[in-house]
Every structure is written in C-alpha cells, then in structure tokens.
Image (cartoon, rainbow, N blue to C red; front, side, top):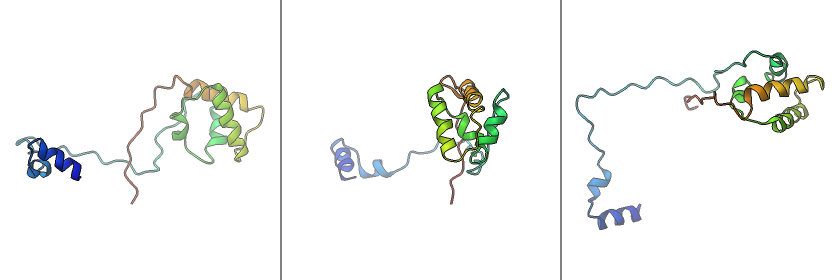
Length: 124
C-alpha cells in the first residue's frame, strides 16, 4: 500500500483520487443480478448413448454428472480414471469397462467444448 501511495504521489495524484470511487452515471438503472443457484445443485445429465447406463450405475453412487461433463480426457486418461475409481470402490464389471471408456471418450474427450461452468452462491 505504501508503494502504491508513493507512486501515486510521485505521479501527481492525491490520496482522494486513490480512495474516492468513480462517480456512477446518472439515469442508468442498476441491474439486479439473477440469484445464483445453491452450491451442490445438479445441473447436467449424461447424453444418451451406449454405455450411459453403466456410467450412471458406477459413477452416480459418489458424484453427479457435473463432474463428468467438464472433462476433456483422452482414451488413456479415461481408462486410468475408470480403473482408479474401481480401486476406490466403484462397482464396474471388467466387461463394462471398455463400453464405459468408449462412452466417456465420445462425449467427454479432448473435443468436449460444450461444458460451460455455472456460478453458484457461496456457502455460509
């Protein structure tokens, strides 16, 4: 703060210029922000396709689709992710693993550009 004040004074600015908020334009109504959704709200569902039911059965026990839809993993990364979740307790048949990885790669691979984060209310 001392450096900012010193630089401002050297530049010929007063302390009032640094601490006084800019005037608001007259006649412009203040926009009311939309209320934000509460943290923990589920916003996304998985797209239809072969493997969806297997992914939902294995993944939804611990988290919503919101975790999946933001990913952009390649095949090797999705395989590692599914195997990690299996080690952490996800119930997945070995025969379902390739179907799940193919589904996740198709919808949430490196080309996944559809995800837009949603702002939420802070937790108090």
